[in-house]
Length: 275
Image (cartoon, rainbow, N blue to C red):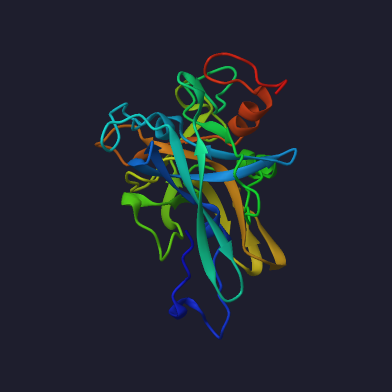
């Protein structure tokens, strides 16, 4: 199903959308054809294979506190709203992916060392033909991530309370880095941000956003001269607040994405590297 953008979004007959707004994808977790809950995800591509990156708790139908999502049913499929942006229109198409090969045998990949303790999964996409994919590149994040400092501004780009900024464009929530990113918080590859996030944002990309200007401010605070277009640097995957009374939220470092895909391990402990 495809939606066209309202004509009021166009300016001088051109449609200008910040790239991260279209990169974040609204997810609908489904039990059969019944909606269980919604969340956020995004795409990365490795060796021409696209993967959906999101939180594990989204796909198993639990929140970050292990409470049931929505109607409490266990999702068996995920509907993914992919965007298609041109200079004068924007639309969305939903593609559905199965979550299990068979009952008890998930299709998604988990972290090869930490397993379910890392709340990030990679789901191979098999219904992506003809889509205008807008992937993030986690490998490009490493130098910026290493230099990122406490108190740096970040953005969590997703769908709080299942809201969208027109059609299915994502909403940006500002936050600040709350723990030293180079240090693993709680002994796992994660750091904390201080941000007023809400349900629906689990699985959102956390980014550093550099606006187009004559100078560019980098995540480490340095500034370079010369025109630079706006750029988004992936800093991690958001997975919910540390508890319901806090504005501190967990962000899984971008390295876990590459480790998950490289490890090719599904939750049963079976290696999928050979197919």
